[in-house]
Length: 117
Image (cartoon, rainbow, N blue to C red):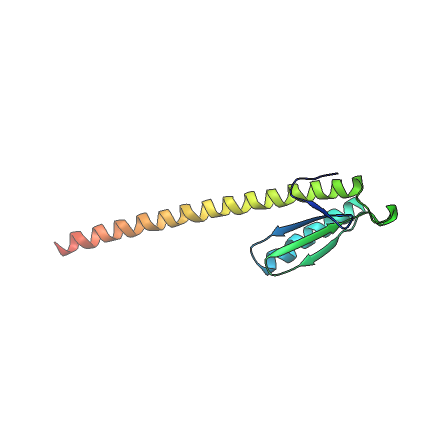
C-alpha cells in the first residue's frame, strides 16, 4: 500500500511535512488532529520547528498499515497541498502589493525631479 510522498517504515506510513515556522507546525498538527478525530484514526505526530512528522499504523490490526492509514495519508496530502496553494496565493498578493508600492515610489521620484528642475 503506497501513498504519494509517504514511505513505509517499521510497518507504518510515514511522511515529513515541511512548514514555514513553529506556529505553522502547531497549526498543521491541529488540522491533523481534527481529521484524525473525524476518521477515528489517530497517528503519531512529531512537531519540530519547521517540520511535522506523521507516523500512521493501525493498532487494532497489529500495528500494520491498513486502508485506514491510506485514507488518513491521502486526506493529509490534500490538506497540505491546499495549504501550500494558500501560501502561494498570499505570496502572489504580497508581490502585487510590493509592485503597487514600487509604482507609488516611482511616481513620487518623478514629482521630486519635476520640482527640482
